[in-house]
Every structure is written in structure tokens, then in C-alpha cells.
Image 1 (spheres, rainbow, N blue to C red):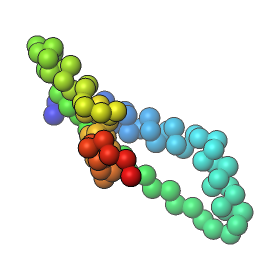
Image 2 (cartoon, one colour):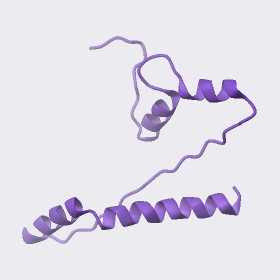
Image 3 (spheres, rainbow, N blue to C red):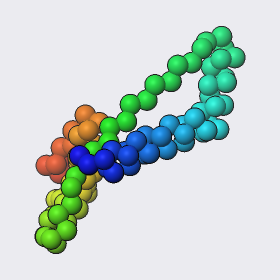
Amino acid sequence: MNQKIKQLIQKLGEAIHETVSESEDIAIVVKDIREQGFDVLLMLEATIGLNEVDSSSPETEEAAGEADGPFSLSDLNFLKSLRISVDESGDEA
């Protein structure tokens, strides 16, 4: 991975951290928890996945965004990263 990509990933991590740190909603809930006599340690883990795009092949881009069913391949990859499996048979229980 080249240095520019590493720097961009670092900036993304910092932006996520800053967003969480400055969230009023989170601050309110943390304050409420502290008022109940507890200290709060918030640890979040973010997984950042990169897929290199081959701009020379339009078929690849088209196929990457489409999948049978209601989810795109990107959706399925994201759900898989969260350890959520999707039954793609179309049967609903």
C-alpha cells in the first residue's frame, strides 16, 4: 500500500474519532451514565477495507455493484465484515 493511501486512511480514522468525540448525543449519554456513578471507557473498532478499482474494465465496475437480491456485493461484503450472514435463497421464515 502506498504512502498516500496510508495517509488517507489515517485521516479517515482521525475524522471518525473526531466525529465520535464531538457528538452531542454521545456526550449526553456518557454524562447520564456518569451521573449514575459509573465511569465510561468507550472503545470503538473500525475496519476499513479497500478494493482497488480496475478502471480499464467497465464490466468489473458494473459487476462489483450488482448482486442477485436486495443487496449489492458491497452490501454483502460489509455485512460479512460485521459477521452477519444473509440467506440469499429468498426464503423468509
